[in-house]
Each structure stands twice: as structure tokens, then as C-alpha cells.
Length: 306
Image (tube, rainbow, N blue to C red; front, side, top):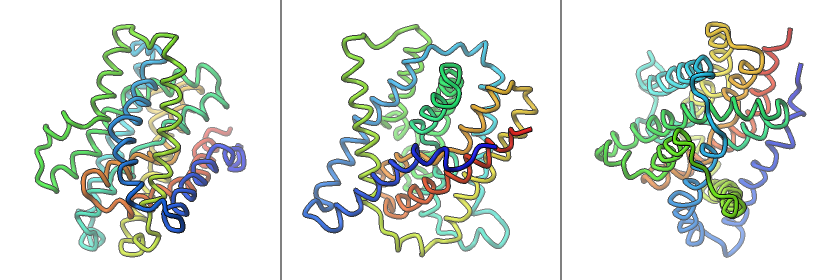
């Protein structure tokens, strides 16, 4: 069985960047006046470039990977449904703040694609990267729509207008079109695009830390437990069942289970903050998810052990 310490080098840098942003914002002149424009830069430019590059750089043969793609869509759809259903659960639902739920539901199903790609490369090599690319290609559009919908609906904003204007969805859709058309980023431009992607991860995580208020989690502990329970317990267990149901091979099963168990996306905080919701609460969930990823990745991959 694989143990949590195996993944510590991959997860610890993300957590330290969040901590760095928190300390800089609280104890140096680099306060919220600095980080608010940084959030805009990450949301409107850096993250979209990274998403586009992640999808375009690996050709996806959807026909050859149809079973994995269907399993990924089934996993994502079920996780979104579970996250949306929380306010309607008997007894528990009436204790949930609907506005906080609208902002934090995305934490229950979104994923950190950078950690997923790094794990796939380390544990499975090029084949693992291809499998993760398939899951990214089919699930990023689904998850981005799922993340935007409750916030747009709760804020009485036009859902279609929010989707059309959402830079993450624009980047995802254009990346898929470019991938299907066989287009790629020119070699001379690749280093610059990769540097933009690296900066987006670092700044996005630091911005999450800068917007974090640990005390904010205390006002909705039940919601935090439910959302993180879906992300780090329900999704890996469901992925195991789907891998068997769709008859996935060992490599595809491993990719699906890794995909299900990695921490939630750091852009959850950026999206919530930019749409006018409680970014501090969502940032706290992202931080806890990064820590819980150590346990859930070990759980998920341990389920593959004979």
C-alpha cells in the first residue's frame, strides 16, 4: 500500500504558499490593498492561461479513452449533485447558510489539476499524464459550470451571462476546441506560457492565504465537514465503484482514483472572492483540503492494493 508520506513533497509546497500569503497579509505592509488586484490578475489572466495550456499540451484521443471519460463524468456529476443537495438533507440542511453553501459547494467536487498532473507523472509516467489529461478535458468544463451556477443563481445574476464571461470557462472551452483541432502552442512560446502557469499556481495559493480568516470556518463547521467529506471520502469511494463498473484497467483506475482524491482547486477561493462571496471561508476550506489530501490520496490508492 502507498503511504501518505509519499505525497508530502507534492502537497507541502502548496500548503506553505498558502501560509506564506497569510503571514504576508497579516504581518507586513503587503495587506489586502496589495492582494485584491493580485486576485484579479490570477483570475482574469494567469489561471486561464494555465488551464488552456494544461488541456492543449497533450493530444486527447476521446475514442480510445471513452470508458475513462464516462467514468470521470459520472464521478463529477455525482459529486456535484451531492454538493448541491446539502441544504436539502434532513435536519442537517436547515443549519446551512445558503449563501455560504453557494460559495463553498465547489470545494466538494473541484480538484487541483497541478497536483494531479504531478502525481500522475511521478507514479505513472507519460501514460498517467495522458489519462489525467482526459479527465481534465471532460471534467473541467463540467466543474466550472457547477462552480459558477449556484453563485450566479443565489446572487440573482444571469447564469448564461456569467458562464459566457467567466475566464476559466472561456479558457477551458477554447483549449478543448484547440485540442480537438490538433492545434498546439508554438515551441518558441512554450517557455513563456509555462512560466505564466507556474506563477498562477504560486500567486493563486498565496492569494488564498492572504484572504484567509481561520475564525471564519467556525461559523459554519457543519458545512465544512459535509463539503470536505464529499471531496475526501465520498469521491474516492465512488471512484472505486465506477472503476469496477466501467471495467477500467489498472492504469486508468489509478488515474481515476488519484483524480478523485487530490485536494480541491486553489481557484475556488479566487472564484468565490471575485463573485462577491466569503472568500475567507472558502480559503479556509482550500487549506484544510490541502491537508486532507494526504489522507485521501493514500486512502484512494490503497483501495487498489490487492
